[in-house]
Image (tube, rainbow, N blue to C red; front, top):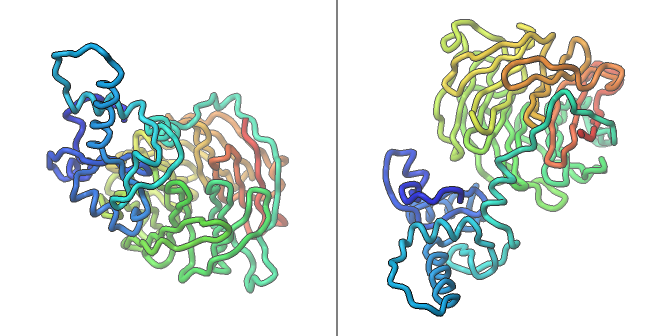
Length: 394
């Protein structure tokens, strides 16, 4: 926990509802402060039932006893429990006797809460003019049992695995990070979008007007049996740690969901921006500002909006398609010129990262993974359809 203020030791879900209730636990996976009722709800929810809750009172007691035992001189100074607990949580190491799960003690890795949170929320930053991409791998996502021509509509790196969305065969395909095929999961609907959520979890969207959550477990993909309804079929999705941002082509709109799947708002671009923008198949949302970046294929450019829907900038780019973030810079597919462009979050089109000679095909989707590698998919019309190119980025 980064703050030592007593006023900030409040239950975060209650705070969002306008209630001021003191927190009792902190979720190890979500880094979210929770009161007792919200803690119980968190462990009953399908998406978070396997999470681990840190009992804050236990930390206070342990820290107090350690401080008392480490000094031989008695002191008359009173101890403020809130300040003590906040200071303690900045340096605490989680072990088997400090984490509670459904009231039972469990073992987890010894990792600082603060350092784990910083690792998730503070991505690497790099000068876009110095970024270099070097091809390190290329593999096919075709299977002998595929009944239809492979049509990749998204790729994602989850831990040391690669998940590929194959729309035509209505499957999620799982590969290891060397491109070796592991397994497939049949889907109910055509799927077009995929986004990382946390740890080994990810979400997809598509024709079922629904966002589905999944987990990579070993060499298989397992449904979390959690789904969130949206108004129309979706063609792109991104989760920034706080919100799900879902793109609809039917009305060129964006639905914003909170982390529990509750709709926060729906943005109709014509109403919000004073101009109608035609969206395609991908979307990105900033972790810090929650600004939204959308490739607009027919307007030849990338649109940036606030979470309220206010247009901030529009950067021209021929036939913009897929989008991802590489170390603080946007990487956007230019389908017309068969290349990838780097665009700053202020809208400056910096330069090409990869050109047509590098790619050798028409790129569609891109994903910068947790492994600091860039994954590129290709259109079905060229010789490289069904292939994934992987680049190390330095």
